[in-house]
Image: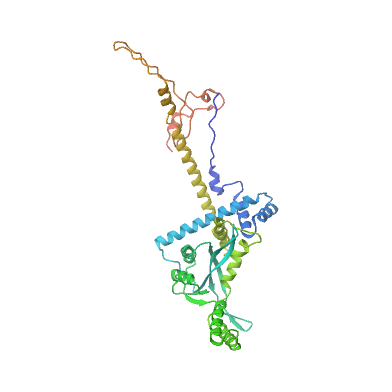
Length: 389
């Protein structure tokens, strides 16, 4: 008795309509698990999913799905940044007043080392308000972009966020920085006309150095002069304080610097990408894009596996057996010239082989066609068969 052809994996048409993702979880369960993993350690995320959604998953599953989702968003943003560099489209209009700040934070990596994650924060400048007798200017609508990258690479990758926020065409842009050289190059690339403001802590450090050089280290005169300058700077000059430091704590350190954590370098950017969107309140906007990328990646992997199987099948059907048999068999005797040689009988039809890219069908002599089970119960009419869609 012959055996049936093995059935391969396939997607039911309803899978596309439901936007199912690879794996055993439904789309909503996978989204919940990934979002929990963005806020807490993966083991705790799995426990919380079991508590709230009554679905048990392992810690490695939570880590794997979160990493895949973050990596998909990193790939999407990187591709979009490359497109912006190539095509240089007109940036969208920005608000009347924007501020941005860039800084780095150290995170622990596998092997006992530390690596610097750079973060960009962009926000809108709000109208001044009076608080405790002082005029204070707050910022809102913050968004973040973080990567584990060198300064020049980070500068290019961040284009996707500065373009989205309309930094190039904003009415006015204030850049609060610590004065580092790499940050000055970052501003030259993204917004050369920005008003560059040294943040208050670093301004105080430079003023202190000036006072020490003028009146002596630790002198009373240097301390009095420093106090006067800091008071003047705080109440009369443009200063900034704490925006990017808060971003480092909120976006990076709150998740990547937990007790006993050590991150593999390839896993850092995927988590940072997810932290960026969740801390920027952009989850509902970004998650559908992540789902689309994950499905495209799954389809590409399936296509690559099909191609590999076809190549392997094509190489296996080159009929190496026939050449081996011909080489081993003795040559046939030569008949005299006047002897009539009867033609060799035609061999029976071999089992049909599936052509590359075509579904396998059993040949006419296959045992399956002579079995009552599995045979068609009716034959379509010629009109139905020949009908065009």
